Figure (cartoon, each protein chain N blue to C red):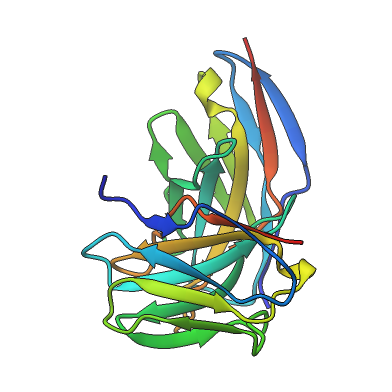
Length: 116
Length: 112
C-alpha cells in the first residue's frame, strides 16, 4: 500500500518570504500523480498543484512550485513571496496511475502560519 | 456557484440514529468521491463512483455505511446506527478525468 509522510506538523514564515514544505511517499509503482492541497481554516480543500510522475519537469503554478525527486520519493512544495492568505493546512497526496484505483492517499498535513 | 456542494454542513445526532448526507458534484463531472477526515488527520478515502457505478470501496466503509449515486448526478452517503467514532468531517469531491479532484465544503458530523 502507498503511504505519504509529512514529517513537519507546523511551520511558520514571514510575509513575502519563501517557505518549503516537505513530503515523502512510498510506492512500488512507477506511474502515479502527486498533489498538494491547501485547506484554509473552516474552508474547503483547494488543489494547489499537481505533478505527473512521468514528467521530469517540475510543476509550477504562479508562486507555487514543486521539487519532485522520483528516485528519492520526495515531493516538496515551495511557496514564494508568502502572503497572509497562504496560511492554511497543506496536504500532500498520492494517486496511482495504474490498476484503476483513483483514490487519493493523503499525508497528515502541515499547518503553515504566515506572520505579518 | 458551480463548485461541489454538500448538505447539510453540520449534523448533530445521537448514537444509534441514522444520518444521510448529500453531495452535488460539479455538473459536468462524471466521477464522485467520498472521504472522511478526523481532527489532525488527512482525508481518508471511503468510496468512489463513475457515473452511477460504485467502482471502489475502502475497508473503512463498514456495513453500516452505504453510498449511492442513482442517476449519476448527486450522491448520498448514509450511516446507520451511528457510533461516536463516526464523528468526523465527511468530504465529497468530483472530477471529470479522474486526476484532479475538487472538494466540497464537507459535512461535519457530531455523534453524541
